[in-house]
Length: 133
Image 1: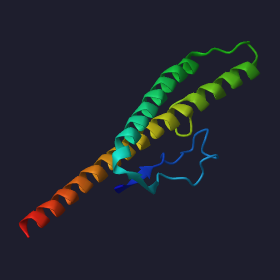
Image 2: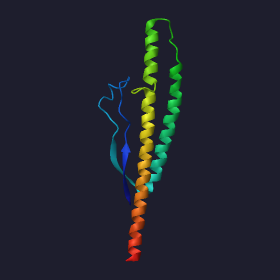
Image 3: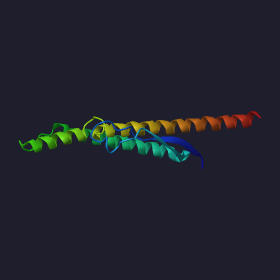
Image 4: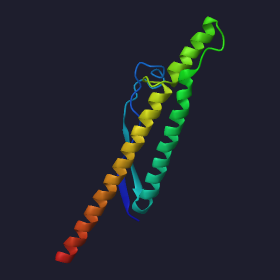
């Protein structure tokens, strides 16, 4: 079993938007992880599938940008504005968080592929060293 190490990236920091209080102090970060080299392609496929599901969810969430208040009272208008803001693309909104998650997953995939390439090059160099010695 050959293990490769890579950094799994987490989503970026929340700004002054709706979700800022929830994500206060959080920034983009990474966690060192390992995966069996033979299982890495499955992990990449799973992460790519997650990106697609997030993309679909983002598309569906855009419908919230077009909602209208159910009544003519100020409470309905305020509630509708809050829904639009919390689902939007401004820092802290769902759209923003979704995009950040997709970027983090894509960067993690890139890191796994780099780790696979590095392992392959090291393995090849080791074999070459044995055959030349």
